[in-house]
Image 1 (cartoon, helix red, strand yellow):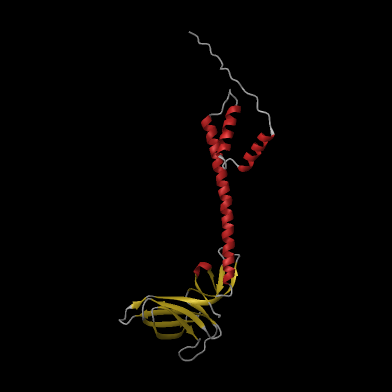
Image 2 (cartoon, one colour; image 1 turned 60 degrees about the horizontal axis):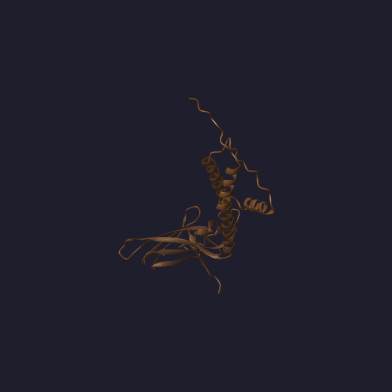
Length: 231
């Protein structure tokens, strides 16, 4: 038996006239973006389905997937823009912070300090009361000073006048301290050293900015504390 195929009756409505309200709504949807308004998403979806070619319709699932992908891409682009703004703000904040340190006396982790005008200063921290053994060397690695001192627990300020044990006055330059400590029973005690120095300048061309302290460069996160030198 032959079966006669018939085409389904399809009613295609004419597009609605463009009014001021509809034009305003279209412009608003365009400016706000598909990812900003879920109602706009649904409106675009249903409008596309209403006006597609009935003889060659777009698969609904495929169309939905395309719109979702578009929304995801738009969201990612906006997220990238926001991240860029955050990075710029962070860079500005780092530069402002670095400039605020210029001229201040800072304490940073390190062993090499500058001897200037007969003074080189270090901060030495010991875990408990002990005897501190200090050795200072010049840039050539030559030992220029040794000494032994009692030290209380916590931070100790060690100031060297640039003179060796024999009274020799060493020239200005960078000198490195080496410190060890032992308690009353002869057991080794942990020792850490920091250097004092005026922040001479801030290099804002680097990211993060670099601070010049005692002839060396440090990032702001290396600063342990700021020492007030005036009243």
